[in-house]
Image (cartoon, rainbow, N blue to C red; front, side, top):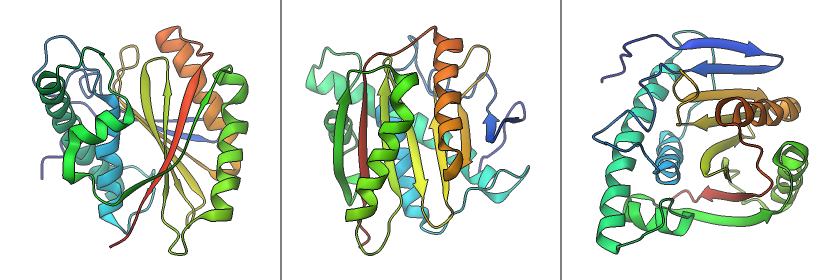
Length: 232
């Protein structure tokens, strides 16, 4: 298994947020054969979600050299490479002019490999991301807790804001939240961050600060799509 990096992960902590910064060359814009960057983020994070689901029994561990670290490196590398290829083929075959694929288009681009996915709820918010993301996520989680299937799957959420799609994973049995962003970040690569659910507000504020710092973006409109995978 190829899980080596040219440069090591940077482990950081900001308040209660645990962070892994990947090297500058480990991003969706730099992995795979591309010439003009990458707009395949929605395809990529759906592939990430599918692979996490297939792992079945995994846990979020931020200790250095933990098994989860090596799993995540390989998982992200494979998903980025494959997502970029699928995105390129889908746009060419379907003559889609839009640079960014929406979620239904991304699911179509992946095809039958995206198995047992159930979209539960989607909402578009004409609101400031920094002011409202936490409250809207909490409202969504409360709704989910009242209707979730009896086998208690992980809940996945795609946040689309500022032309970026990122993945949030809510692991109820560990009481943890995982954020995965495969874009580059001002001299750093992809990033993975995690908190306990009680510290979700800190993670929301941290992500908003990265949008502002890395892209000078303060989104006033964003989309949250909640989904889960049915167990066979």
